[in-house]
Length: 585
Image (cartoon, rainbow, N blue to C red; front, side, top):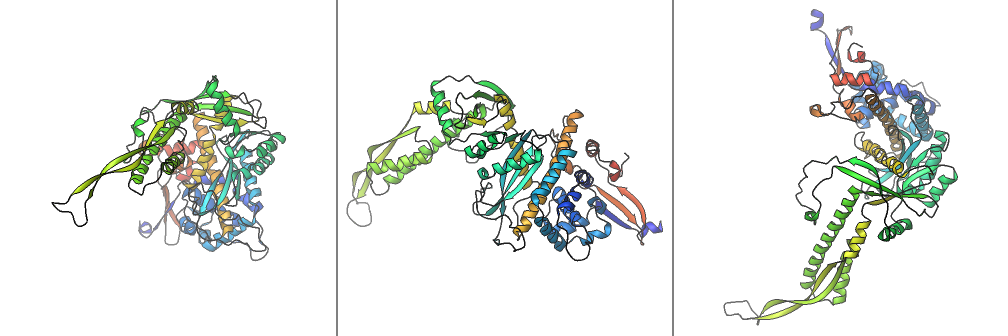
């Protein structure tokens, strides 16, 4: 009893570290880093291996995503063995060491390193590569950055202004490109570009790199409309590759089809149905409803229906074009047209009032101003405006001075321009025939109309990976001072995303194999049918290991927080031993 009275209680968090550690070891991340990091040319041996420091940073991003300066204090609160550290090594993890290792990571060949990790993931996790999706995103940064790197170092990506996808054109950025498998949306390609790089400049190099990674051109390359450039599509065709992309609205083939459907009956075939997630939910009230909202369709359909049709005309490059009509997009197009027309009417009324209260202008100038409003709202083909002369009464005081009881007024008529708006019913009807339409283009000879749509519908899952990087893993915005370290940090972020995706993929596949429809991972025990890695980690947050230590450091007793039943179920799905949480295997 006396030993326990003087004992010291040590409480360190376990959290989801055993899961992360198992996947880091399965991937062999530290061995991959060690193969590609430059070796030190001089100095004493590292007390803490560089690959170990970087793996701790990957773990930090996955588990807590704290700023780099907080990583040493963060590591002090966890069981060091689960970070791959000896208890004495936690003191070696400091800002200077992290900065040096990030500089070392930048000097490594980032493409070769990530490709090594991707190839290992494909082999060890049996990823399927028949279909690969590609997309890019902007990474917003803050501050001024030196444009020139040191003479003995490679040039970092240029941080500059570009087309910011976060809608912040006032901030500088980098462009990060990512390609994922359709099998679990696992990243297998990553590259950082200059901030002013556009998507249409990337796809040839990306496709070539993916061909080298896969080992052949026998895969379907899926990307957004920036892929549908003649040079890029012909390049992939000449290399015996296949692609699938959205055909841009600016192409002449879209104008041809819109004219075609005005005079031809199209034999649409229903190719896909989706459940409406908002079906049965009450509408969200708005403080300031949009103009024209009273004309919108209030009811929500239970399903979204997609009909497909293969165009009788090939693209100018000779590729197949599939056209689709979405019931959801039809409603959106109808609603958008009505909203724009309502806004145009309001602005025309405001213009009429403003002109009546200002100096008189001639009818031609008034008409040109009204026409400009219609063109600004993109409704000039649906609304036709005319100017009619009109006048309103105004009473003006006779004589000068302040008005009084005997002041006399005279009535005058002030001319003004009255705008008359008429809807072009034929144009509206013609536009309605094109509502809900969107095209896909491919050089595949075997894809069906239905299969092409089903494949492209997986593209948003890649965009979700970028969203997870920026929200869950908090990749952006970036506040580091050195462009070299920013590039290194992005590589660490994408390595963390690779681990994140593999964990998520395994849980979902094993749930399906075990016929588990959902797990109570949300607050209040609400069910999740497709758990994300962040939800999985939440089931383990706060679980600690407690140790009673004597004055001389002798271990007296060890006890653990008890995991919840769903946490134990997740450990079983992931093949992680529960003994690390003090539970019986």
